[in-house]
Length: 78
Image (tube, rainbow, N blue to C red):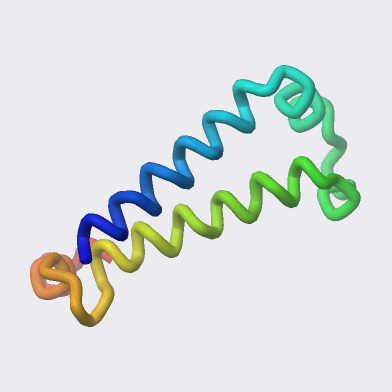
């Protein structure tokens, strides 16, 4: 189970780094005016990656079948 979550965490992080490594996409995000995010395909792509990453982190630490769940809850990590 943790292996699947780890693949998703690192896969989404790799996708994010790949997006930032693309000079055109990085420049687009760098110059994107606030309030125009919804018009940007690149921003939408980054947002989807962020969502995947967040869910993978949550599942890693708090999913019902995660061996880290009890420790995460008892220590108040989230």
